[in-house]
Length: 107
Image 1: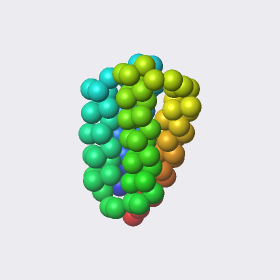
Image 2: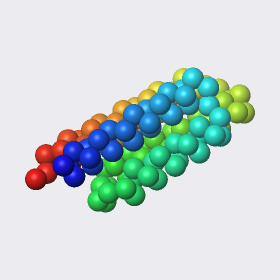
Image 3: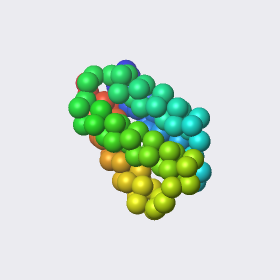
Image 4: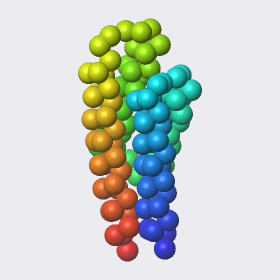
């Protein structure tokens, strides 16, 4: 029962992070970056320490910050930074999916 709730909580955070990353990809603001930071702090501090999740979250935030900064200053090229953002997002999604799976399997 507790394991299922934990797995569902991780899945909801995963979906929320992906939604914010998608907003940043389409057209970012400082508010989106702040929302992402809040979600990442929540996901990294919400359960047992997981260095893989922490590193993936740090990479995702750094990539998102680069996209937001460059978009706000009209810096080019943005395509590489968007690719790095997507890649970092996928790494974190993969790590969180594994954590949700492990949480659901605990007895």
